[in-house]
Length: 137
Picture 1 (cartoon, rainbow, N blue to C red):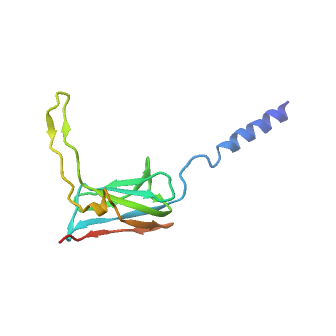
Picture 2 (spheres, rainbow, N blue to C red):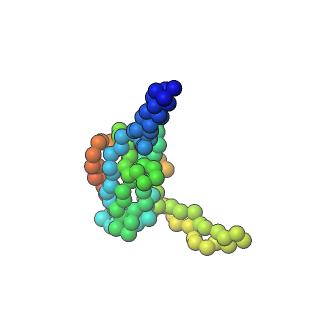
Picture 3 (tube, rainbow, N blue to C red):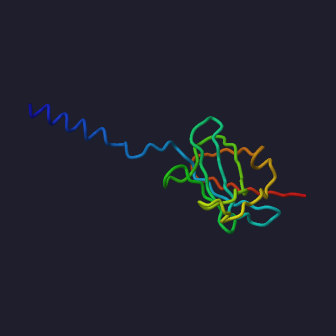
């Protein structure tokens, strides 16, 4: 009986080993978003895996810099090809009485970077610096 209890204890303990993270392999992704040479602050950066799976996202800082988050505090994006969306538009925010507390923001970037994106990148293992230097006429 003691032997069965001991084996059961070893089995239960071994089940916990390696179960600390359910995060698949990801690559670190960071960079800068600029429009006509100027940083784009408050831009939502989304990487959507073409093969399916969880997207990664970030918000650019005042210098247009971003660092993708996969989930929780796990940084990065799934390995492989991604469709990228860069979104600056925001809906207006209203209070409980329907009054606008913050006005909306119109999209600053061309539609080929957001609603009709044509942007695709590949994320590899390790460090992936990916900048988006957008030029408009």
